[in-house]
Image (cartoon, rainbow, N blue to C red; front, top):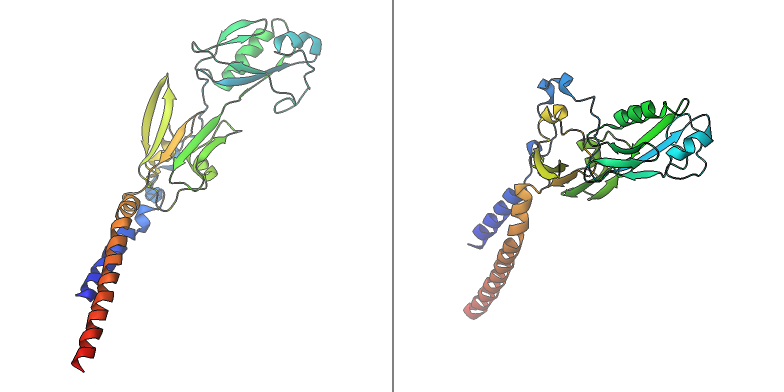
Length: 261
């Protein structure tokens, strides 16, 4: 009886904790995937409440000074941002920024390059050879759930994929559900929820492969992990009971043995 009870307990524990390779592998159909469907031309667009860094430079520093939020000296640069690129503009609820001299500009829905081209075109009316630098100051993503290092991460690049975001968070735990990742995204003021399946290579061609600023990835636990978490206390109680029962049986058998002598 005792042996049967232990056998049943062991079988149940092994059943709950068993994880197969098909539960943890990414892109299980990658051998037959159409690789040309991978998205390569994604650019994030400007949204409400974004924070933009915008710096205007040019050959004549005095001429470009009025087009910057501060009158401090702007370092001339050949690539990347100027050293003091702290000139920030908040996109209001209507999608506008207030830009020096030019005035209110509706930037909602523009890409960074589209805004650069627009400002350059406007500035050329008054400034010789203007150089405009625009970047997102609030490009952050949040990864929660069954990952090694959940948290919020600032991103320097404007092209970050789901895989890169999970890499920042230390990758998925073995107990994570690969086909049930939830992407939470603000679209036009509404929170949308998109289910991501990392077991399928279709994500490589999905419009959600590249993340947008302030996206949230939630990685739920696998059904096995949930079952283990909820049943572990029960099995601990059963094992404790079986151990106690075996101790009692051992004492009883000892007493019977001594009495029969």
